[in-house]
Length: 256
View 1: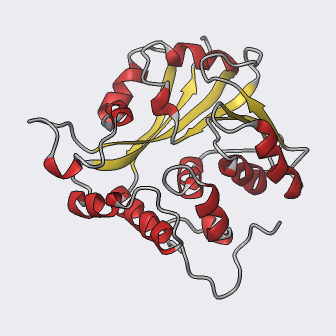
View 2: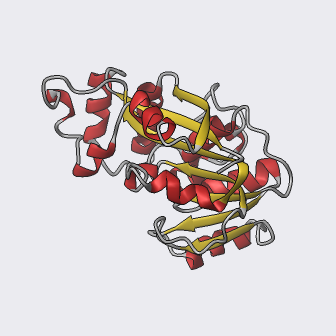
View 3: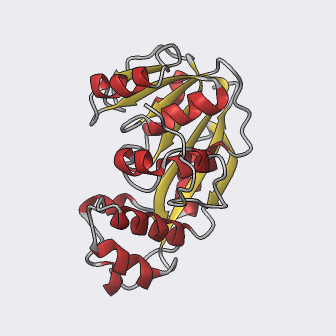
C-alpha cells in the first residue's frame, strides 16, 4: 500500500500543511473522520518537541491516520486507541504500511483506558475530545496516564463566538445534537486552567478554519465521499463567523 502522493495530483494541496501534502489525498479522504485529520495533526504538532521512541497515546484515533502520521514523521511509538473502529481493522492498514513495531491499535473507551499511570510522554486527541472531554472531571482522569511534564494536546471543532440570541438560522441544517459540545477557545482554556493540573502551552484557532473545512468538503464532494452535502452551503454562509477549529496544548505539572 502506497500512501504517498502521486505525481500530477493536485487534490488537497494546501500551503498551510506542507507535510500533509506528501500523503495520498484519496487515502486521506477515504479514511478521515471529520476534517482532514492529517491537516489537524500537523497543526497540533507544530512547535512541539516529539522525539524518536516517545510514547504517545492517540486517543480517539479513528482509522489511525493521525497515528500513522506521527509514527512516520517523528518515529514515535503510538498507541492508536479508539472505541468506534475495531483494532483489527486498523492493524490491517498498519501492517500493510509496515508500522507494526511503532503503532499499537487498542480498543477502549476513553473513560476506561487500560494503561498504567505515568506511562505516556504525550496524549494527543484529534477531532474526538468533544465527545468526552467536556466533562469537568475528565482532565483529572486523563492526566494520570501522562508522565510529569508530559504534554496533552487536542484539536476540536468549536465556536468563534457564543450564540447570543439562539441558534443562527444558517446553522440549523448543520447542527446535530453532538454539536452542543462545541465551545469557544476561552471556554476550553477556562476548563483546563481552573483545575491547576496543567500549564497551557498553546491555545489558538486554526487560521481560516471554516474556509479550510469548506476546502475539505469540496474535495470530498469531488470524489463522491461527502456524507453531508448540505454542509457546503452552511460553511459558505457561515464564512468563519461561528465555525472554527481550536488547538489546546498543555503540560502536566510536575508536582501533580
